[in-house]
Image 1 (cartoon, one colour):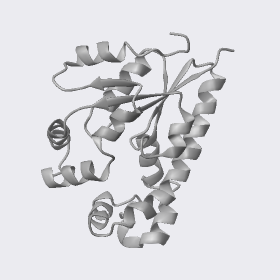
Image 2 (cartoon, rainbow, N blue to C red):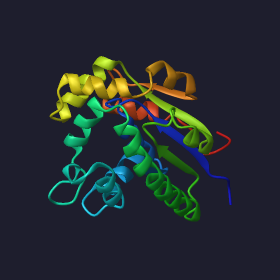
Image 3 (spheres, rainbow, N blue to C red):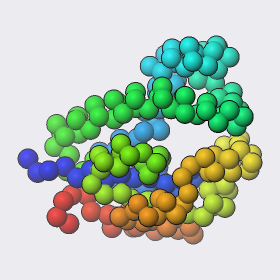
Image 4 (cartoon, rainbow, N blue to C red):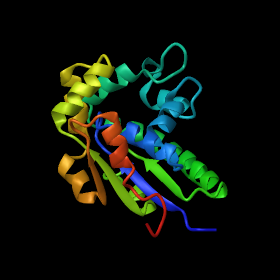
Length: 202
């Protein structure tokens, strides 16, 4: 069995990282989406809900039993420790499920696993788990415009999210490949993603 190439894929909110992940999936890579796993953990009946309720109180759980994201976002703006406390609950569960999915991909003899991790650069754990790092980069203004166009978040809210993530310069320093996603059509973005090797030796 050939060794499995493990790629880390990261980028700020609104960078186009998920779109790039989709192109890599089309080329045969197994995609492990940390955001999707996190959402499943905080959805109604998710594995993190009980611990979130105990840590933050019932006010942060919706009537259908999911994390109240708006309430949690507001708390994080006023309580700098709240985000860390939430991550301490969610991140171990995400890591456990990501490892399960990776083991499944190896069993299916996938030549490449892409770990789509928004906080990859900030996380010493994930940096050690991947062979190469792909960064999808763009300007902060592009991030704001994209997120506002697809959500109900205000400019101020998006800017606070961007400020809470690692600096753009830090992501670029960690990159083995950079896709600069400003002014690209979907076809051009697909071409950029197509240049990334998905197995060892290429």
